[in-house]
Image (cartoon, rainbow, N blue to C red; front, top):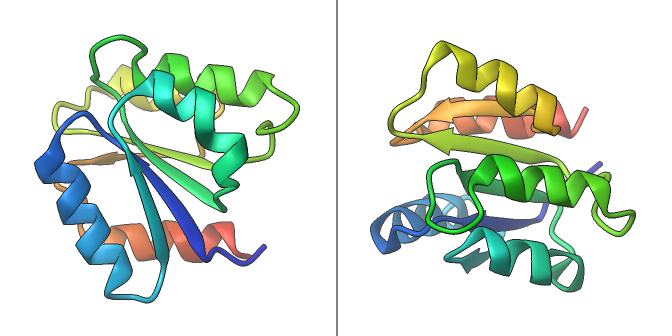
Length: 122
């Protein structure tokens, strides 16, 4: 599966800007939303190839939004990478249980993100 369109979901404007710049510089088409609720409502319409979502957000957390995406037939096959500035050991297991493909520490390093994007395209 080719990844061209990426949806970033983060309640931090700074983090959305950082990831947008990082990904657009590599030629990806990037969309950004600021909440888990907006992601669940709009992901199918945006039809991204990948979602990169913060875990800790007000309202729906990244875990909850990921679970909603995996339960909806329209977005069930959409790969999600979760991220947080405060990862704990249990976060990786929880991310997998919710349906995420990976869980990365913020700020996300370009090389780490590239590894996961490449894996998802195999």
